[in-house]
Image 1 (tube, rainbow, N blue to C red):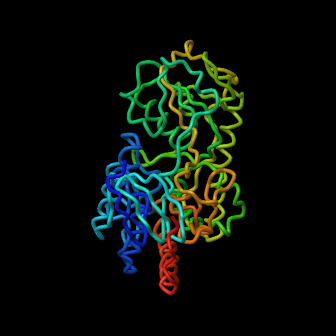
Image 2: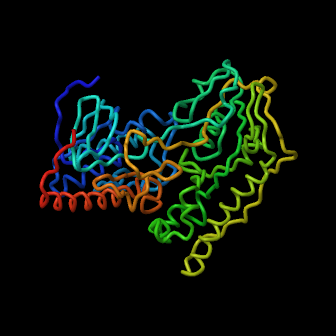
Image 3: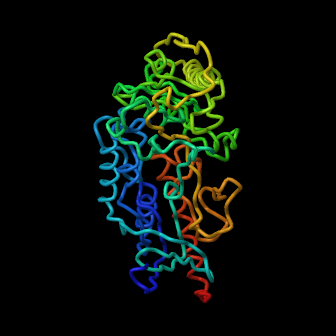
Length: 426
């Protein structure tokens, strides 16, 4: 039920009050486009507050936090902000320019009608010329096929609902997925003394410190993060790749799942099937560990070449030698025999843009765009992976993307002023 039947008029509607939406608002204000509003379903920086576990921290160094005219302002540029520090950083950014954000507002639908966007919200209907939704408002975590067969006495949660080991019932924990979230949650539980089983996916891993610097610092210096999507040699791979796993915990370190295995964590291959008794497992744990290591070594080799080509003095590193190999490949996990009390799903997200009614989506459900600009005049997206560069879905690239989108909005406003106001269809 809407709180009001009145139709409101505004130039730009931004959907989402995270760093992406705030950055768009900042650039709009900087250009003098003050006739805009941000609708946030919860509070500013909600995903950082409520969808991360208690020990969560950044995996990229703080110096890569570059919101518009608001770079990292703390004392540890090479450190990794904790969850509360990230929220505080975003809040300080908002306080700099007082964005017109309405918290606690849900957006029900967006559609274009008669040349104007009609945005239905929990506080009424709004008409506007431009709409900018953020990504994380429009993705949904999912479980693999067959998960509905899991017995009800087993607790199931998504990574976004995990907070700490204390919330997990007594018993052993099965983490499904070895991307950044899966590996870090498995580590969090492992360090707390919980018995953990981890089903591996295809995520690569990355070095942390290498030859005297953080690997991210080397890659930044090498210009890797300036590579645009248009320049990327393998665009399909870029869009489908899972983030490398590593952590900023305790000052930053690598995650080597082989070391976890030595310490008692049970590693498995890919989940092939699910029934009421357990999982059937593809016997490819060794293959997935080796694949992750190849990515790790590839990054190291790239840094080595850069150091050699530029005659940089840097300490040598001992070659990586795997510290553990699976003696045999497990092909199943039996819930009762393994005393599994909880399953934590870390297998990814599916797009859910259904509330935006437009013919712009590809077969995977993601909007087609050029640097966030869609074929529907006035409809833009912010925060998508590789919107323009690697940093587009991170603090590192949001400012540049937001500025580009606002440039297009400004051009749209100029063109609109030269055209007669379209009549809204009934």
